[in-house]
Image (cartoon, rainbow, N blue to C red; front, side, top):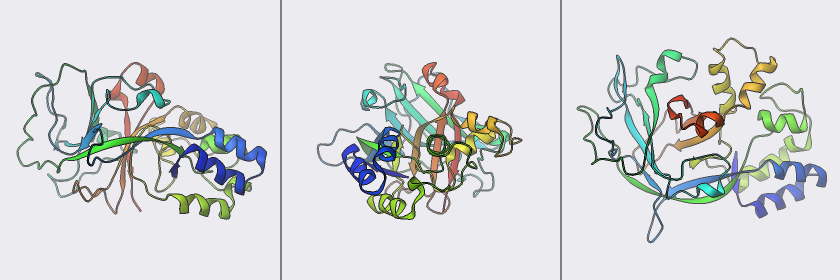
Length: 288
C-alpha cells in the first residue's frame, strides 16, 4: 500500500504506533525494485512495451482460441538490484511479461484469476543471457505498445494491515482481508501512510500495492480452485505461499490502461522461482 525508505517508514511508525508495535511493523517491510521512466544518465533495467527479443525456435505466446498476447514489459535481471531484494530472481537474462490485452476482440475475453481457462492469457518467459535473438515482429493486427525505458531504485514496501501476513502478526484469527481492532489499523496511521505515498506504480518484488483486497488472496483462492471459504485456514496458508514477482500499472507514456486505471500483477511461489518455473507464475489484475 505504500513505498518509501526504511528510515522514513520507521519514523512514521514510531510517531503513530506504540514502540513494541512499531518494531514488529517495521520488521515486516520488504524491499522492492521500484521502476520508473529512465531519464538522462539513469541506467535502464528494462522497458515497457516494444518488441521482445525471443530466441530462435521460441514461439510468440498465444492464448489458444483467442490470439497472440501483447508484450507488456521486458526486465533485464542482470541490471536489476537483485541482491537487494528478498526473492530469488535470476541474476542474468530477461523476464518478458505478456498479456492478452483485448486489442483483438475489443476486450471481450478477460484474463481472470478465478477462470482457469483464461490463465493462458498471461505469461512470463525467462530468456537466458546469450539466448536472445533479434527483436521479433509483432503478430499481425497486434499493435506494440510505445517503448518506455525503465530504471530502478530500491524502496521498502508496506502491506495493508489486513494482509494475511500482517494479520497473523498483529491479530491472529481475525477475519481474512478485513480491518481489525489494533493500532496498525488506526485511521490516523493509515492516512499518514497514504499521504506519504498512495501511487501504485511499476515494481519487481516486495509487497504488492493492491487496489482492492490483497492480490495474494485472489491468487490463493484461484490456486485452490475457488472452493475454499475465507474462514478456512487452508486459504491463509495458501496466501503465504505466494510472493509478488512484478506489477505493472496503467501508464500514459506507454499508452497502457488496464480497466479503470488498474494494475497487472504476477505472483509466484518461492519454490517455483528457485526452480525458474516462470510458467507457473499466476496472474491477476485490479482496478478502482
